[in-house]
Image (cartoon, rainbow, N blue to C red; front, side, top):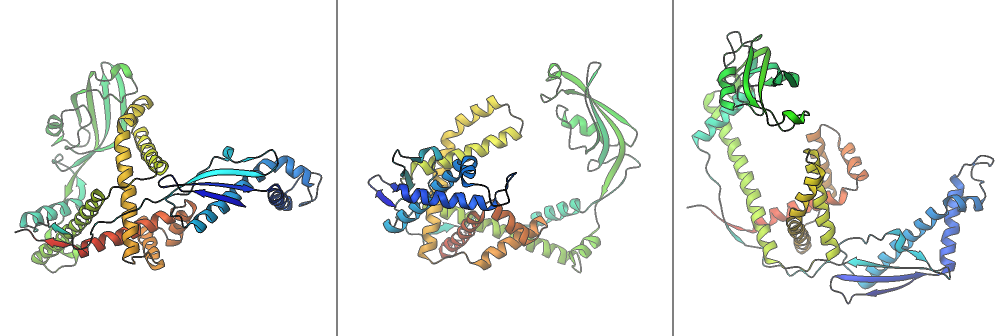
Length: 427
């Protein structure tokens, strides 16, 4: 393999390599033999299909595989012999790799290189704490929310309360036409259907029981299949089939649920939990603020192909989310056009953060171990009620292992920055 590397362009290495006709044909014959061993064709014993027929049927695919084989070899050789620090693997369309008239194989590709990074001082950074104390009112609110979450339903014999709910059929009427009907919906007085005045809905629904019907004026939604009815005045009819009130647990029940002896201990446990959550949020805020400060202090000339790829990835993700929300394709394209600049800025920031994280990790010998990876697999498995082996398989099949390693390294670097910082407590 004859290979040359040109590094005259900033952050880009231009690689050219040539494979002789003899070497290419040698690999081609090996490829034909490998395919022949597993080929089955009517009229021939397994593995005995003639090479000429293998070449006729599979020749183009074998040649493409060989081109990729030599591309990987050239890439590894260029990186190793020239001490290159790639930022991304080259992606070369197969049409760019062609056999020449003399039978040799020549190819050119570019390797995007990591820009030189001069890290600012990152140890001992000063930052003000924004941690606020947990007040009695915070404990009261948390207990009230916990009671609401643990409430049980019972049939509302005398009509539902504001915190109750109904199982019902919802009908939208436009004149004499029924333009929407949905059975088995669950509604509370605080969740009015779209287009219905919220206060009027709550006022009408509170006190109602199973078997009753509520009718309210409404503005018909723009999402209706009937285009002529969209935005028009109509009637919303709620046909109640079942009505329930929510019964919150007593203090004694809450104490038993949280395994505490009395109401005072219950408040102490809630306060402790709120304090831990507040401290965790503040730690995350400090870490993000410190990393953002380093990103702002670093000016990098990032390789354009990598920056453009990351920008397009962000726009693609945005397009998928907009499509899932039901936005028409024309509107999606307009929105993407307006968001191009923002997507590029976010891509620039993300790539800069990656380089900073990797550099600090290298400087401070912060590494991701197999124990770290196993712990993360177990954590993900627990959240998704599956096994670590299933999570590992998913990450392997979707080539997400490197992404996990980067995320784990970022956590370590963020924690390191926070632990090295001088956090000033509020006066």
